[in-house]
Length: 524
Image (cartoon, rainbow, N blue to C red; front, side, top):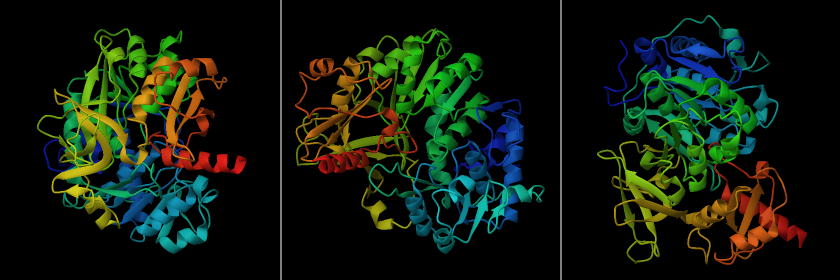
């Protein structure tokens, strides 16, 4: 019998569906798109069927040559089958290495070269697009495709019916999964997770899930290459919640979907929630049955929480805001209701998870950390990753015994609440907190879908704005909204779709600033 992830010191993602099927076989999973690797499979699955597909794909991967401890880099079109394929590789004791579909081919190939001659699991979208066959061949031991057969590639479609394999559970401290950092500061780092560190992330998420009724339908839009997806599925499937997995985040289609499935729990990235704000007044009332909203990865604007909570008809609807990092998982959090969301301080990230996570503030300039002199935020958690692959010294530079310095700066309030002001690399001279300025303006100008403050050519604060429907920015309203804020350059307006983003929808601020500087210099 497989070990229960809630009763061991390790969480093995390859056995999660099978464990869930043993205790909650009627749990359903609905996806809003066809699976690339299993195109004929229904979009409505039971967890038993999901476990069967993971077992099947593990057998096919074994037949393709994948063995325990091998690196299996997954770089393909964005699709829920990424979750199935990663779970299948894990079931064999291999190490899934999750590369975002949004990565360019040069970056993806560079990361492949950093690994130990990995198997590359990809598809025609990448092979016919951004990947160079010769360069890939030089850094991998072979290419496995989720698409139909082609020359020089092993197709999983041709390996249907391969003999099934028993799951391989390696030592809890060995590498079990690799994801990459958000890529907001250059070539991503490959973060190594062990089964033990994954279990350390599972614990606080399981605790939060106890507040949610099992009968609720959970609608999730999460990056398939982020560890949050695997922990989220472990919690939801174990709890027996019906899960709706979303690929399409276009507001009109989200409204149609939610009007049909009426989710009680919704989790996505902060920027996706911002994009969906306009649905708060939609006549289909897509959020009317939502009791629980959950946002991770980044701080969320208070106005977004307020509008979404007011769009729910449920008594005591709650918005959970969780602060975490790729290297550590969830760290602090707090909840908001209709009574206090509109008064929320957008820089407030809440409190550590009792008995699980801790944080401390370390001086940056010799001054005691405060709002005026924010300190480095360091955290301690059993969910901390075990390293950066191929960059041991780089990881060690951020580790101080049990403490991890993630690059954010902030301060602690009198009641112990953690406030984040900026990432250290995003600090702009003359601006106390770029995030604080963005919160204030977004609260005042509802027509804005996004505002990002970056350093201009001369390090001046340069606002980049996106309106909800592409309408021109009203300059008079802008001037009024920023009159009491630090002096900034004239705003630059671009379409929302043109913002460079990571797999978790974070804006790549450094890339955005560099692109704008290049454009401005060229224009002059």
